Image 1 (cartoon, one colour):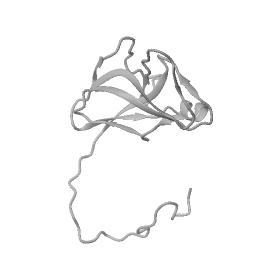
Image 2 (cartoon, rainbow, N blue to C red; image 1 turned 120 degrees about the vertical axis):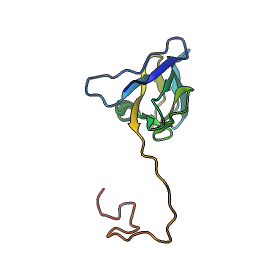
Image 3 (cartoon, one colour; image 1 turned 180 degrees about the vertical axis):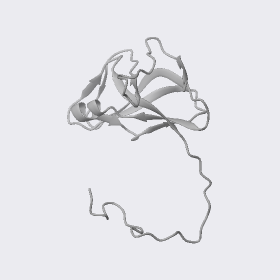
Image 4 (cartoon, rainbow, N blue to C red; image 1 turned 45 degrees about the vertical axis):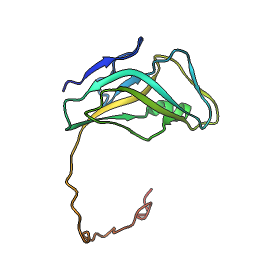
Length: 146
């Protein structure tokens, strides 16, 4: 599959797969100066990349980088970013610092991963009641498994 992209900022880099087995491509920060995110603080990091998905049957997901999250406490402020097929603006990455120390991001640093996935569009049909299951309405650990 081909995904067209443009670079919207000087110094921006194309999304790049780190290895042949990578499921997602890295996104890189494009900053005028290093950006320090304070403990429990948030920041919006520009990537300077805009994409064009092949059509509404695809979505691009912006995912956290595990190394940033585990080693430095930086993860996505919105969990997973959703880029719809009709969005043409530049991708920005919302980060939150969950650590107890300030964390500085440098220009060119990998800040997130971009994954393109198929979309299953649904027809939502009202029902007076739903079929019962063994689990029922149990959630939030109700199965006894973590």
